Image (cartoon, rainbow, N blue to C red; front, side, top):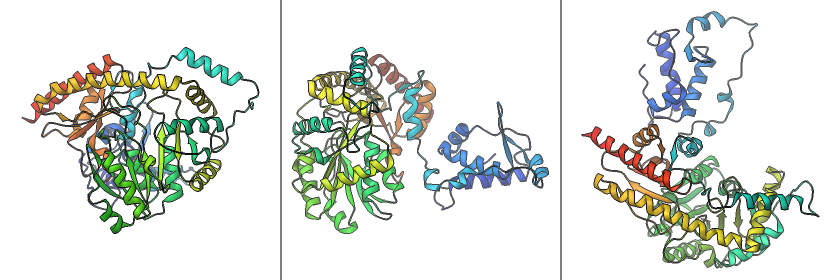
Amino acid sequence: MNIRVNHSIKTPIYMQIATQMKNQILTGEIAAGSTLPSERSMAQILGVHRNTVVRAYSELKDQELIDSRQGVGYVVNLRESEGSRGDAARGKRIHWPSQIRAKYQDLEVTFDDLFQRFQEENVISLGSGIAATEIYDTEKVAQDIAGLVTEEGRNQYFYSPYQGDANLRQKLVSFLSTKGIKATMGEIQILTETNQALDFIVTLLVNPGDVILMEEPVSPDVYRAMELAGGRIITVPVDMDGMQCDRLEELILLYKPRFIYVNSSFHDPTGAILSMERRQQIVEIAGRHRVAVIEDDAASELVYSGSKFVPMKAYDKLNNVIYIYSFSLTFMPGLSLAFVVGDKSLIRSLSYLVSVRMVATDWLTQKLIAKYLDDGSYYQVLERFRENYALKQELICRKLDQMKLLGMEYERPRGGVYIWCRLPEGIDSKDLVIKAHRRGVSVLPGYVFYPQKNGGRDHIRLNYSYESRERILQGMDILKETVKSELAHKK
């Protein structure tokens, strides 16, 4: 079997694969009755996403050229299909891939599969941005949850208002004041997570064809939300002081963007922190040209050296900045909550969108976080998270320092949970990630952080929040051996 994928032509990749396989089946190059590689294996062979192979195989099944058999896999079924095509009494299955809009299927993103590998117990995950599990006292949390559920006077259905629990929003006003942000309860919308917040904001603001300025590299979750809404992404490079602002005004004049997206503190994936000068500069430029700014600030509390930076939202006197904060890295895994701060008219529209798309927001997590903000225990836990993550960062950096002799390069961030590593010359991150996973450790390849896939093949992103210190050390040793093996193979 000889399949070639051409990324430079407009023919969808799944159709390229299906067409070539069809021709090889009809000519006998792929024999009738032979078993095809599994979806995952074929994806690895061709260097595409598994969903792309699923769609190609579905196309061949729809043409009755192959069949799927339990315990066997996909089998070439040419002879049977030729005899069955005239059987009018036989029902026909819907070809679901042809019914689903293409932009929701042919997404070549290994990010999701790689990110979910934290669920594989035999694989050490240095890729998943999940909060540490060992910080909270689970017995105390269970007692607190039981107390909230049985507390007198609560609505038995536990629905919360569409804008979010009023008590929590009141506590968040105080929490925001510690960051220098002045906000009222009416300027806060509670949501489940950052991705949901971005999706809702994009739904409200972006029309197909609208230009969006964003950093590069950038989290795949971010640029996919923009792409699926039909946005046109224009990227701005990032260095260790964050988004480079030299040409920002020129880009605004040229493209007239709908908004600018900035991950201001401990940027994903580089770990960069936007300098104070650039924070003020972006707010000033955006205000001058009446352009909105979305500030994603989820990791800003995780500072291990030096002082915390004031968010851009604190400098925003015109209410042009939409501020997103998430508790994803500083609360119990599985209990997710984020909130948006913005102009009251925007928040009213967000609340309306919540009412259309959701029956209610998560009542229990809101009440729990409000309780911990109120009694001060959240701030105590924050300190434990900082200590925990700082120790893990130290361990992972020691291992990276040992790998410098192999050609590994990195810059140590002042906080956060990400480290952006340049691989030794000649090593491709895509190949390295596959081979590291086979050895028992998962990391994220750099190219998934580039919207046009035009960079990052020489980088990987490490995350140290989720795993224990012992497993981090094991994982880094495995990574080192994988790098050494790749270098030996390149000689």
